[in-house]
Amino acid sequence: MSQGRGSASLLMVMATLVPLMCLLFLVEPSNAATYTVGGPAGWSFNTNSWPNGKTFKAGDVLVFNYDSSTHNVVAVDKNGYSSCKTSKGARVFRSGKDQIKLSRGANYFICNFPGHCESGMKIAINAA
Image (tube, rainbow, N blue to C red):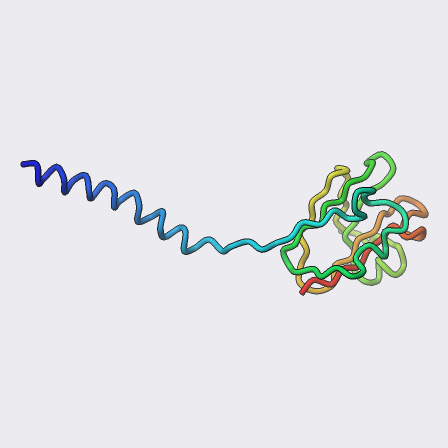
């Protein structure tokens, strides 16, 4: 009789562990880095050179810290970056503590408050 109870306990343990072990094989390890744009000063004027010397990968996260009453972050294309113009449908972030995951390839961000992008409040990042 005790053999039956031991077998039932073993089956319950196995029924719990097997799905958990399967999940471990499905989870990919995350090697994403997190970068605070502009360093301790945050997202501000003349941050366009901030990415220089840094290596970015798809999946890395950019943290934009700023005063949301005076700035924003807009994800734009190359044209928007070059012209400091926001196209219809561009994603605008306004929280003051935005976290944006980089896509593979070119990623462009500007502040579209009047004159801010033209004063260097923009960054271009290429993520491998």
